[in-house]
Length: 380
Ligand SMILES: Cc1ncc(COP(=O)(O)O)c(C=O)c1O
Image (cartoon, rainbow, N blue to C red):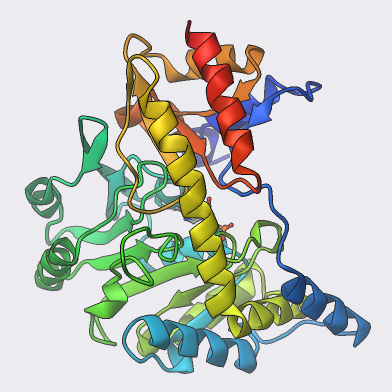
């Protein structure tokens, strides 16, 4: 086996979750998904597709109707975007892997803004690239970017900068000014940006979406934006996402998709088309509900003694630390025995050791309050 593969760590979130196997009394907030089911019109569209016997391979880049619908959706939020820049992928994570395969190989340097969902740093490592981590800085519970440190880390030798904002786990979100500075810098160094914007619609400021590189980039900039149906349409189990590419990459990305998944299932893509047809109402509802969840959880957490956290501007996670508890894996495992399931910060990098992540996307906000009661009792 290749060394890079043998060295892959297991998920520390799974490690905590596995310690609860066989227990049905744990309130689980460890994984990055809501406990709510995919909206009915989306499920119906997939069922209808299966009834029409759409059980065959489709084109590498996705159904033309879905690529058109994604292009219209992207264009309605950002700058106009033709369908020729869209590749449908079998999940956000697969799209990110394919983008990384296209852009970084063995020995290349990739810079990543961390802490971050571990997949985006594991992917270049799997390919044999070297990953340089640039850490966000926590200040009174809120994580911020040291822009100068990031720009200093991205040099002419940097093939790819990978950045996820709104960020999982911290809730940190790039500002427009930061994006402009990063884009200008990467144009100078010839660095590709892979922007993971899967939480762009879970943004709680007065805007339909978080600031996106797609608002400011030219169509032929070295920029790949990854997105997903998972979070904003409650479709985690469907495995459907997309990439927005410079047009010169699209055909080759289609070839790479051939060798990864070949295509996304047609009935799943039909679900995606239905999701986008109802996007305005569905995303508004989901965002309002997720904001209610955030506003239910965060103020309560803030009242607990020793808890430090900021109010996340985007995403669906409260990321907090408890003074005096520095071993997040040990703490998360201990909390399982108190009936509450949280993700240890160290799962997202050593920079986040001592922190805990709580996914607040919950069908019933009262569940969050029950979780806070259990945490409060466990800390007494
Ligand atoms: C930051 C980030 N990017 C991408 C994904 C991928 O989502 P999916 O593969 O379900 O589309 C996730 C899922 O947790 C995530 O947190």
